[in-house]
Amino acid sequence: GSHGRPHVYRAILEGIAYEQRLVGDAMMAAIGTRFAEYVTMGGGSQSDLWCQIMADITGVSVVRSTSTEATCLGAGILAATAAGWYADVGTAAASMTGSAERFAPRPAQQEIYDRLYREVYRDLFPALRSSVDRLTLLTAEIVENKNADYRRDDPACGAGAGFRTGARRLGSRRRRRHRPGGAHRRRPGHVHL
Image (tube, rainbow, N blue to C red; front, side):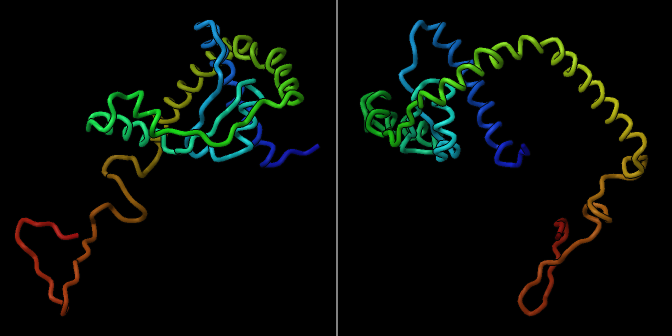
């Protein structure tokens, strides 16, 4: 079959969710308990597809927060506590946060994703690590050489070329501010653009 943009988009979402599972599983193993849920915020949290994929791949329910702006909400919680509106951060957070839709893992989809995770994804990076390390070194070398060649070979970057924007040097033309009645006033020591 052929693949189009929707397939690529879904693959990106699935890749991010697999990485969340990898990190989440490691964290749960370290603390010795499973997460009850993931709370999602931000623009991506508004996508039902994204939330469902995350739940299906991680095996953990995803709960959409009532606030999409995590940073603003956190700042507001701290500010409200500092202003004395709440006794402590926990009380402020309990009062100022809320949850909306819940996305539970779907057993049939979770089974497919789990098999792909166990049989392919989990061992993929360790198997490719030496190749990824080599690719990183080669990329850095290529970029460094390309930048050196670019600076040396590009006439716009040669001696005396200066920095250009379009066909003219930055600041080579001055635009006057128009005043009512067409009067232009210049004051010594001031640059008018």
